[in-house]
Image (cartoon, rainbow, N blue to C red):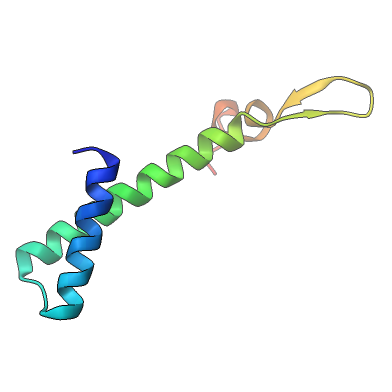
Length: 76
C-alpha cells in the first residue's frame, strides 16, 4: 500500500468513526496505519535534517547530520 493510499484509508476511517463508529478491527487498522504514517514522516524529517550543510565563519562546510545526527552515532 502506497503512502497516498494509507492516507486515504486513514481519512476514510476517521470519517466513518465520526459518522457511525468503528469496529475493533477497524480501530486496530487505523492505529497501525497512523503509526506507519508517523514513522514515515519522522524518517523523512530525519533525512532532511541530516542533509543540512552549514557554512562556518572560516568558510568550511559542515554537514549537521554527520556532526549531530544518527550518522555520528547519536541516538537522539
